[in-house]
Image 1 (cartoon, each protein chain N blue to C red):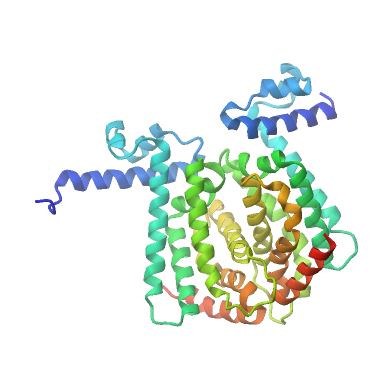
Image 2: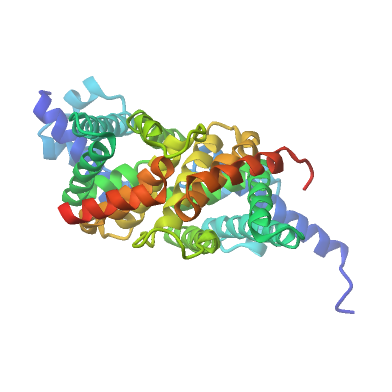
Length: 201
Length: 216
C-alpha cells in the first residue's frame, strides 16, 4: 500500500468508527474505500484495533503539529496561543466527523484508547508553559496550571462537537481564548485579549 | 409490619450493591463497551435471576452505579456545607470531600468522569452532563459580579473542565490517592476567573491546609 492509500485507509477507518460504532466498524469497507486488498492490509496491521490506533495516532500527530506550527510564529505568547487556537477551531469545524473520532468515538473504545486521549491533552502542555512568564503575580502559579488551561479549552470544544455544533467553534474563539489565558494572566488581562480577538475575528 | 426488614431483603440490598460495584470495576478495567453482564455477574458472585430482579440490563445497572457516585457526592457536599466556616471556606471542604470520595471510589469515579462522558450510552452521557451542570452552577457562586466586563458565560464550565482533565489523568494512572493533594491547584483554577490571581492564590494556600487535614 502506498502512502496515499494508507492515509485513505486510516481516515476511512475513523469514519467507520464514527458512523457505525466500534462493534460494526468494518475493515472491509474501509479497505474498499482505499482500494487495498486483504493481504495488503494484513501485511501492515494485525487487526482492526491496530489499524484504528494507527489512525488515531496519525490524526493526533497532525492536530498537535498544526497547533505547534501556528504557535511558533514569533509573536508574544498570548497572540501565538490565539493563532494556534484559531487554526485548531477552524480544523474542528471543517472536519466535524474527525473531531468526533478524536474526542468521543475512539477514546470510548476502551481504557487503552482513552489513555491516548489523556496523552493528547498532555501534548498541548508545552505550548502553555511560556504563559507563566505572563503572570500578573510574583508567586509561582500552581503546578498543574498548564493542563488546567488545556482542559478548560477541551471542555468547551468537546461540548460543542458532542452537541453537533462544531461549526460554531471558530466564532467562540474569544471566550475559549479567555478560558485558556485566565489561569496565567488573570481575568482582566485575559478579558483584554478576548476583546482583541473578538475584534479581529 | 411494613417497617420490618427481612433477611432476604437485606441480602437483596447486598446483592444490588455488589452488582453495582462489579459493574463499576468491570468498566474501569475494560471500558463500558466491552463490559458484559456475564462478567459483572461473575465478579459480583450472583446469578442472572438476581441481576434481573434489580436491573433491566447492562445500561440500567451502569446508570445505577452512576447514580450511586452522584448521590454520594451530593451527600459529601451537603455534609461539608453544614460546617460553620464562611462560604468560600466551605467550598474548599466540599472540594476536599469530593476528591476524597473520588479517591476511595476510583472505579465509580472513572465510570462517572470517563465512561459516561466518552464511552457510554446516550443516557449515561446525559447523566454526566446533568452532574457537570450542577457543579458549574456551584462554581458560579464564586462570581461576585465585580469581574471584568464581558467575562464569558462559559468561565465556570471551562474552569471545571480543567479540573476534570487533571482528575481524569490521575484516575487513568491509578493515582486517585493524589487527588486531594491537588486541591490547591483546583481551588485556584475555579476561583481565578472570578476573583483574580492574587486572591485565587491566597485561597489556594488556605486550601493546602484543608487538603492536609484528615478525616473531615
